[in-house]
Amino acid sequence: MAESPFVGRSLTAIRDFNRQERLYLYRLTRRLKEALAAGDSAAIDHFRINDPDFGMYEIFLEDSTRTRESFKNAGLFHRIKLSELNAASSSFNKKESYADTIANLVGYGNRVFVLRTALEGVCRHLAERTARYTERHGMTGGVSFLNAGDGRHEHPTQELLDEFTFLEDLDWSAERIHLALVGDLYHGRTVHSKVHGLDLFSEVLVDLVAPPELAMPRNYVRAMEDQGFTVREFPSIRAYLDGAQAGRRAGARGVRAGAADGSHDAEPGVAPQWYFTRPQLERMGDRILRRADELRSAITFTPDLVSEVDPATRFYHPLPRHREYPTIPAELDDTPLNAWERQSANGYLVRVVLLALVAGHLGDDYDGPVGAEYLPDEPYAEEVPVAAGTPKRYSEGVRPISDGLVVDHICRGDTPEEIRRHVATVQEVVGLHGRGGEWVSTGRNGEAKGILFRPGFGPLTQRHIGMLAATVPGATINVIEHGAVRRKIRLVSPRRIFGISALRCRNPACITNPDHGEPVLPRFVRTGPDRYACEYCSHDHGFKELFS
Image 1 (cartoon, rainbow, N blue to C red):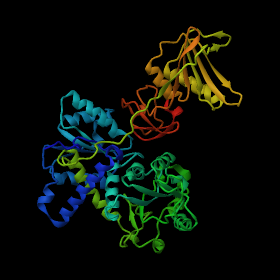
Image 2 (cartoon, rainbow, N blue to C red; image 1 turned 60 degrees about the vertical axis):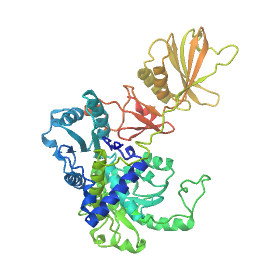
Image 3 (cartoon, rainbow, N blue to C red; image 1 turned 45 degrees about the vertical axis):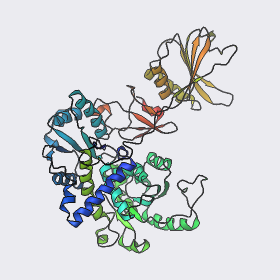
Image 4 (cartoon, rainbow, N blue to C red; image 1 turned 90 degrees about the vertical axis):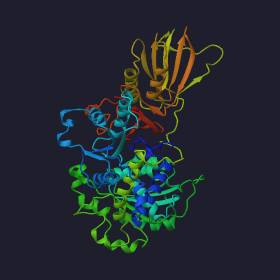
């Protein structure tokens, strides 16, 4: 029998499982649900790991009910060894690193770790560190880390159960979804997981319903649009119900997903599926708290609005609902809108199947692509032919440079002060200290650019080129020999930036932040022109913000 391609895999963010892998997981979950409904004991037992030596650890450093208990009950279904770390008395309080704590627990025969933390990117960090630990000690079978929610970043197992429930209500079709996301879209990690999770569907229309103070972060909106999603935004439920119907008659604000000519379809109207989140106003300070009633009102669906939505509409909620200020009031529990209770129950089933997959008990018949669908790296430097004839010469002041390095076109178009600040950063990051100087030059069109002169600098290494591409994309490196340019290299933004000690993620909650004491350097992936996201926490940065 072939080994399952899921064994030892981690789910740190929803993109760790590609579209085909998730659809496979949902097909298995559907079979399990049908077997349970039919009371088919033989079919049910097919899903069980049934190994008392297979260890799963729950580590919840933030409060949880549904996620913790559904994983616990999934473990009980599998008849495996279950353990729970008491965070209050753990070595975390003695300043032990996450990596060292987990290494000890791996040594005790545990193979799955379910973590919820306020720190973002912990599971990815631990998956990488633990892979090296198991390699050092010759351990086989792999260790899986399942992200049960990390700060404002993601909640990928919640995304799995959400997608499964959406598919149930779409008659198992992944062709098209029209979904309204309603509530606190700024803090809600469950909706942040949907930015990439909804790529499960071939066509995606997303309506974002939140006042500006709770709106989806712009980098997530850009990411959805870059994937071809149609995205509309509304400041309240009332504005959504009024505007979506009016827009259906007047023409779309959003561009039809996949339309090559940018044409507009008729406005799609109000979504048949709504996903609510709890407002987390306590995270936003006194100014927001003084407007709490107003903000809650904008994202609360009151019973008098039921007549304004199609009877086939379904509401979802990751729960918990606030008992005093629920965005879906309890009066709606007995209406056909209620899909959130079935959604919650589905979480147990999805997690049963997920555990069976990463344990290698299921998955040997999967024949699709394996792993995250990441784009390959691209060249970040292009050799430019030096013009024939008399090579161009550079002078620093009145004296020509005989040998060395000139970096030209730095931050072209920025203000002189911005250029000077960034050139100082570049010198520190790349290590371009020594003789020479820095100029800000203004062209005939009034556009400023920076020029960095380093007489005698050399030799120019590939690492220098990579670091300069990361810090001054768009610039040109000129290598000077015997008073003339002998080599010219044009720089472009790298797809990924990593391995530079000066890199810093600006998110204070990121596991890579030095304040947290974990020995991990951030990595960044390009998300747009001069924009990068941290690969641990997805925090959005301009390229100049990447360096301390």
